[in-house]
Image (cartoon, rainbow, N blue to C red; front, side, top):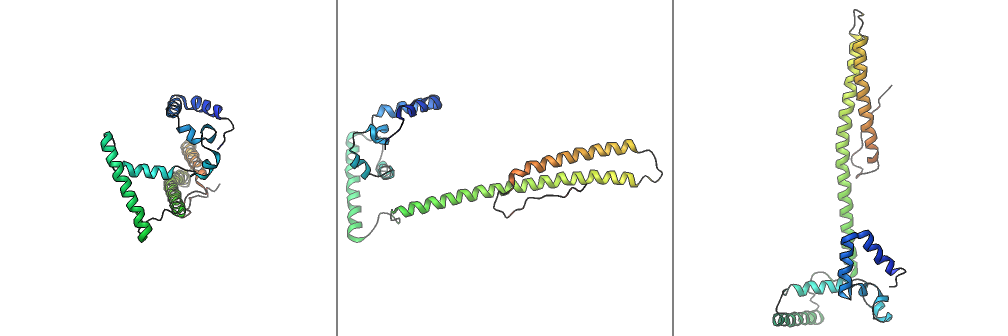
Length: 216
């Protein structure tokens, strides 16, 4: 691949990444092959060969993982012997597959399997996110139910105070206090309603968001 602004990109990594970015870039530059393997312009590989190669390092990573199972941190002689054993095992594995159709795994290694796995993983991740939003909706419903109940009780106390004043006493001060409490309850309820707006259209759709008619 070709890069429109290679040096500018490296500079941006250092500036925006700060120390971690600087250390990462320094490590890659010290290998003298990592960045060259990323960008064809920096490599010495002919374009035709570069295009013919894999676009990912999945195959190399897989082989690397297999080799590590034979052992790590080996001595020179131990590493040589384990490498020979690994190569011999790989050759026998390929011969079995070629001669008898016996694959080393139940998976065929076809690109469609990776695509299916990625789709299933993405689907599971989306489902987990939707279920988490369902839980948020449940919590919101409990909260708005509590705030609505508090508002209803405050309004009922006002109505009861007025209706029970058979002797026509001056209850204006008491009613005023009850009205103040009701106003606070209404303010708290409206705040809960506003907070729940961001939940609309979210979740699996199996749990409805509660709403109440406040009346006049």
